Image (cartoon, rainbow, N blue to C red):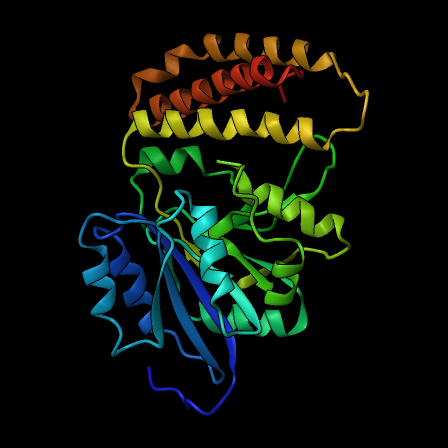
Length: 296
């Protein structure tokens, strides 16, 4: 990918990486195939990898306008993204993850969208990189066709961190990702930007292939963590004094329906979906007890 080095950089693609040697090559291969008539760069923020990630990344420096920055001083993808963004030379940032793959035209679509809008999110696909049982879990994911939206205050749209694009000045003005939020930091990030008065725009022309966890145990843990942190966000953003005790009745009803659906575990796809939902409900309960609010 040869670029005119005298032109200003319009877009910085930020990849957080921690022990991503097994997958990051696929992402970097996909980025070498990208074409855009404006100049862009790739920044990999290494979050303290101990595998061969660094060696793999360095091998792409002749194919991409690529830099590696050290983000090992604090664990977490949010910290790595913030470190990468702090060194970016582009007027806009596009985040993607080391275990996913951008589709053809992703850079151009995100870059052009960020010339028109301050904050954007791309479309996702779970089919290419995951087996059927995992795809079953995410078959109704809202970001296949649009933005996700939370069902609790502040009732705002959101998208996955590795699908977001933002003007660098806006990212800096809100202080980047909140590094104290271990999961759902992308939802919190989207909330804070929208509450600052900037809308989130969906870019259907930009597609990202998402790679999910490889085992049911890992998926259940992910569901638990996502759900538990969703309760934290509910506590953070709900109106003061809003008790919403009816959510407990809804939670009990959903738990009852989950156990009534136990027969679905006899199929591989049904088992994956049931285990994900079980992890999600357990996370809701844990989050509610930990943060002393009703489960959402």
